[in-house]
Structures are given as structure tokens and as C-alpha cells.
Length: 317
Image (tube, rainbow, N blue to C red; front, side, top):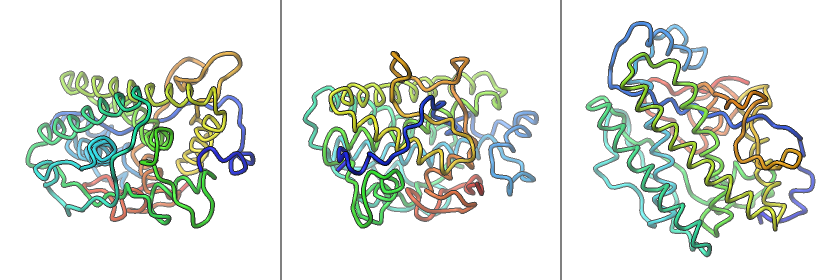
């Protein structure tokens, strides 16, 4: 399905695409109300929220929603089960996870990478919940299933990887798993990068930098694996470009996101601008992607009922 050349031939083959934006907004320090930092954080929200002061706890909770999504996807892919019940409660409406199952990995390296990333993402959920404390939001409803009308299938359809009425199964094999992971990982790094200048407490900044580094490692693992497999099967590289184009169509007018197609004689494992610097996304733009909607909405896609917390509205693009 993913390697179907007929579905991919019509995809736009843009040449030098610029980065994957990742602003998962992981600023740390439960309710560390530094006036300058909180004022700057208002820019993390959508325009409709611009008059509302966003606190450190709000930013952390936004990150926690996204960590729930990643942790559940990887946990199911590796273990066949989701997060334990003690990691799901908190403020807001707790939701269930739709779909998810263990991947029948055939490549030992991909299986090992998946186990490592799963452990890291579960640790991020635990860390953020501890950092936020009693203000931590509950896990919202999450869709990581394979239904033809579900989030993964809708994202793959928007990218042209599957046709109308068809489903995309990220648990079917190694390549599908990597492409499913690519949807998330290439959005995560830009979120952390965008949050860095907004954190005034050095302890929290160090923690945020640490998580940013981990997410960047994860993204490079996924991108490298897809690039290596794409050398023998070019349609895999085409698929990363298709997903990248789909993300770009949701998050605004810029064309910054990149797949793994080589630029000249060099690989494109690390998506950067002309200065060798990664791009950033606003929280609202991140929500456009995970909601799979270019309008200003509060739910959809991988979060069918929306995320929990003050930062929950995407932006109109």
C-alpha cells in the first residue's frame, strides 16, 4: 500500500524543503510564574487566545497531551498494550485510546529502536506529570487505530498514500510503523525548539533542552531508517515527502517541512534551513497537524475530543 508506485507518482516532488517544525512546548517547572516568561508564552497560543496569559503549567500540559499520544502509539506498537492506568488521570476529561496493536517487526534494528523510543516516551509522560503535579491534565481521547475514517488513515489519505475508503495500518510492518512514527517525530522537535526562548528559569530550560535532544535523536532514528530502506525502495522516500507536504498544507503558508529525499549528493536526515538551523512551530500550528485540520478548531484527528488544558485551539490557515 505504502509502496504502491501508482499512488505516489502524482505526488509533488519539491526540491529543497526546509525542516520539520517541532514545537511540542515542553517548558518545565510547574507553575513557575516568572512574569517575563509568562508574557512571552502568550505567543504559544492561537490568535484567539492572545489576550489570555499562558502559564508554565499550561505549556507543560500542552506538552503532556502530545506525550500521551506518542507514548500510547509506541507502547502499543512495542508491547501490544497502552499506558498503565496510574498515568492517565488528572484535570479535564479522561479519554480512552482507540486502536493500537503490536507490530510484527521483521527488522531487528527497527524493533530495537521502537523499544528504546517507547521507553523514552513513557518516561516523558511520567516526568511531565511529576513536574506539573496536581495541575496535570488527564489523557484525552486518542485515536491511533486503523479504521478507514480514523486519524492515521485520514493523514495517509491527505498525503496520497492510500485512496478513498482505504485504511493505513502503521502496525502492519516495519515501514508502515516508521511512516506512522515519522508523522509524530518530525513535529515534536520544532515544538521544543520554539519553547526554548520562552523559558527564563535555567533549571527548566535545561530540562527542556534535554527533552528536545531526545526528541531530535528519535526523529533522526526514524528518518535514517526510512532513508536507508528508501535506497532500495524509492517509493518509501516519496512517502516521506508526501507526508511532509501534507503537514505543510495544514500548518500555514510556509514550505518549511522536509521529507528525507536527498538534496544533491547529500542525504537529508537532518531537516534544516540554509543556516543549518531547525525551524519552529507554534502550539496552534502543532494542533493543526494533530487535529488534521487547517481551520481554527478544538478537536479532531488524533485527538477526536480535543486536548485537555488551556492551549487547545488550532489556527485558521
